[in-house]
Amino acid sequence: SQSTFQNFNNDPMITGERLSAWNPNAGISASVYSPDFFAGLSAINILPKINFLTSTAESESMMISYFAIAGYRFHNSRNILMFEPSAVFGVKELYTKQLDLNLKLFYKNIMWSGISYRHNLDALPGRTVSILPTIGIYIKNLQVSYAFDLGFKGLQNQSFGSHYIYLGWSLCKESMKMVPCPVYD
Image (tube, rainbow, N blue to C red; front, top):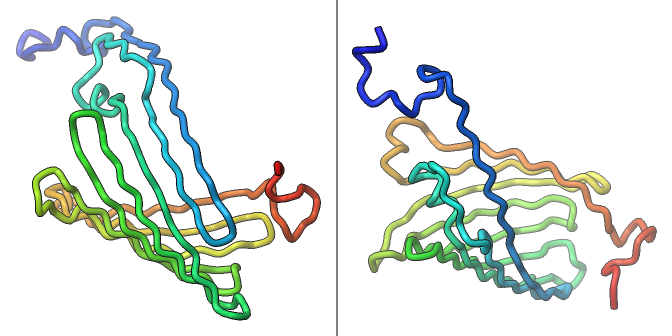
């Protein structure tokens, strides 16, 4: 019976109430890129928080987060192979600092393979959070990639990593000559 439950006042299945909230948010970013170099800054969740009965996990996901990214592409003489190291530094408002180090190897700008290493910087020397190997291919304007997140957190004892499948469509592809890339000068 319901009388044996503890603290069921906020459970809509038991009380019959409907709880909902609307929390609009926004982000801002700027980036620069060239055929060999890219860099950018971004901030997400920049609007003030409206906390209507949000859980701790929800309020943590709504904290302002800042990211900086930079990378460089090294080409061989015939552009058959391209090597792209990059780094992403992220800070969540009063919370965690993380550094992602990434290496990507492209073959004829058609397929690639790479690896990402995420390190938590909160208490130096920090700790490894995850390693993420990835592979991908371009098929005309379609990009298909697969990644496997091999995490090193306590939850990893219960599950063995996460699988990611990414599908992307390029609206602006230089080889098509339909839309100039970049679309501005």
